[in-house]
Image (cartoon, rainbow, N blue to C red; front, side, top):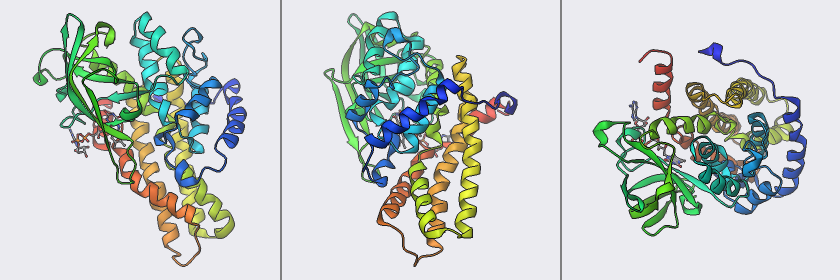
Length: 383
Ligand SMILES: Cc1cc2nc3c(=O)[nH]c(=O)nc-3n(C[C@H](O)[C@H](O)[C@H](O)COP(=O)(O)OP(=O)(O)OC[C@H]3O[C@@H](n4cnc5c(N)ncnc54)[C@H](O)[C@@H]3O)c2cc1C
């Protein structure tokens, strides 16, 4: 399996994008405090997403005929890396750009592609992912939200939970049961694009430990969706969701959630802690870890660029990536705590406090550590 991850370099034409993006971001984010930027792909700013869209940086891999830039997965890697590195507030468009758009491109009808993709590229359609339910998170086969075919299309009932940005989104791509019962496991699951403005949809935001309300509960009470709300093939929802999760789990966002804290701490070390051997050793450990994971994430990007769906490898990178994302606040906290009387800026402390509170979620969102390790074991033929 390790053989399947080849060392890859970013092609020069994609790498060249970096300078332009960096210069745009240094203006666009000037003055935004580190503890705000630390929210990164959880930070919601629809205006910022629209500014990226005006530059052609939303749907960068989608074909030009649907409003995309037709660039490679490597261009998207460079863009993502630059945005995440400085903590740009990308959450408004992130899910649509990362997975809903590619999913619609892969499984959608021509009418669905022509309707949704140009809107995604213009930051006019924001999406959320409706997989988890109150009693079904890890075990998605047990979901109970139903879509029943009727003359007008699909009648939807049930509820979803932990839906990131549901309260700000225009559409949800929901995994629902269209036939059979929970005893049928993955058979009879399908994906439905739900217009969240339809009558019968209600959204209730949930506060997290850090005080942000970035996810919601969503209730469907006999929501009448049109016939063309079904995306892909009825009953193929499980295979489609797995293809979608490969997009969701493979990107650099699974390594870079603590980057703003790392940069802020590095700036602190340069001025206050130069010569501190403990800080230097910790930094060396973090950077070597990140360098390896970045190489792994890039080799996944190469597979995506070839049109492959590297679901198992993406799982591996996500599992290891969230370990480093969680270790960064812990290790930095330990170094700062080892010299409790040394001066530390309020801005660094606020950023650290935010990441300490958020970090447990890194290995829950997108699939828990235990579930990912089960998938890896299966991929290695151990289960
Ligand atoms: C910040 C954040 C954002 C999220 N955004 C979304 C979103 O946009 N859309 C969405 O659909 N969901 C979202 N989720 C939900 C997330 O995908 C689920 O929380 C996750 O899949 C776990 O499901 P659960 O919470 O029901 O926990 P459970 O499935 O009840 O698991 C509880 C514990 O039991 C362990 N466990 C469960 N089954 C097994 C097993 N078979 N073997 C070993 N251990 C097991 C789990 O690892 C976990 O530790 C989000 C979650 C977070 C934290």
